[in-house]
Image (cartoon, rainbow, N blue to C red; front, side, top):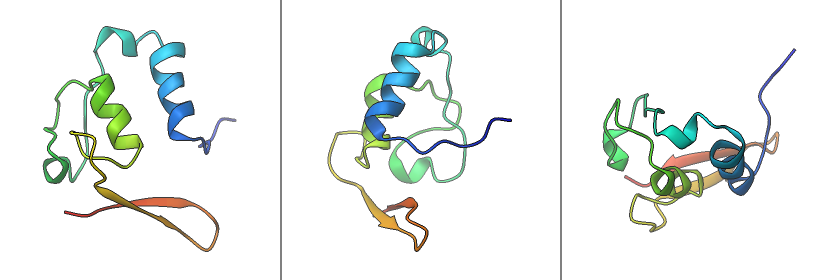
Length: 82
């Protein structure tokens, strides 16, 4: 059975853009609530630079936009500074 895996932003980027051939074709789309608050549109193509900025806690221009909080269980949660 597969389940969620905790990994670093660098490992996530490497997985999605080096190991997953589907991401190379620009066929991934952004979905979910709160996209507009960080400058993205629902259904827009996931670009590598945008993906890397978001998973590293930055806004689309590369500036720090998210606070990283750690729960009692040690899980990292990202909160928008919008």
